[in-house]
Image (cartoon, rainbow, N blue to C red):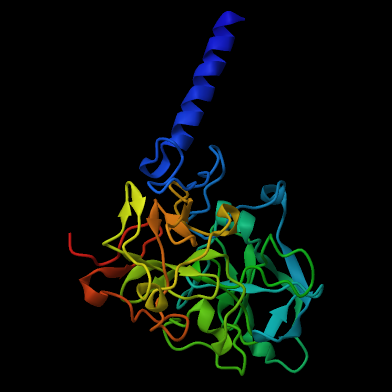
Length: 327
């Protein structure tokens, strides 16, 4: 009993130490005496999966693929025409799949979060081109529905017809239009090469997580906020101890990103994911203890006009690192 009690006390002490030393704050406060906030509790599942799924409900692994039945088209105010199955559930496509040759690259844990739509008893949506309906044989030998050559999926976190919680997840998952392209208000579809960002669908913001990851063609994986706007770090700031060099007029050009719930993120490092209570009283989100900002010069999702400004501002990676900063 005594041994168990000692071990328990040791674990508790280690946990407290880990919390209170976050971002170089041994007392849990900033140099100005303000609270830093709590780090992500130990044991919380990481959201940074290779497929941007964010996990799947219990039992998903045992679910067998089901067909879509009678396909339908849902008119979304944000996304325009969206393809659904016979029960009204949104169908999705994955940028890491391929149409030449037709290939599904979502397997294993990915398929738990993104259940595949089985080929078979599927009827085209009224008014759509039946020749776009096809199938692909997956690695496990099952056949998956394709539309316009793109394999179709559902999203485990969509609970009811009209949900499109998978839109833009990981910067690679998008609701499908009736022709298999990315849903886009006005029917713009995607450009060749599939470089349309989740945030640019229809020219307006979509339902992204509070912070998520977008794959920029030049910068690679960068963090974006809930509106799809690029997040930046300022190399004159400090993460250890956490402090800021951007105050006053600087904040007019570089607005802070407000605190985000750790559970409302996809693909973001949770270590050092704390709230910074700035000396000016503003609360700011950090990644790996680095304060993060947006740029007033970015006018639409996907813009990276702040990259390299003054040699001190850089887009931030999912690990909290300045992308492209001189080493």
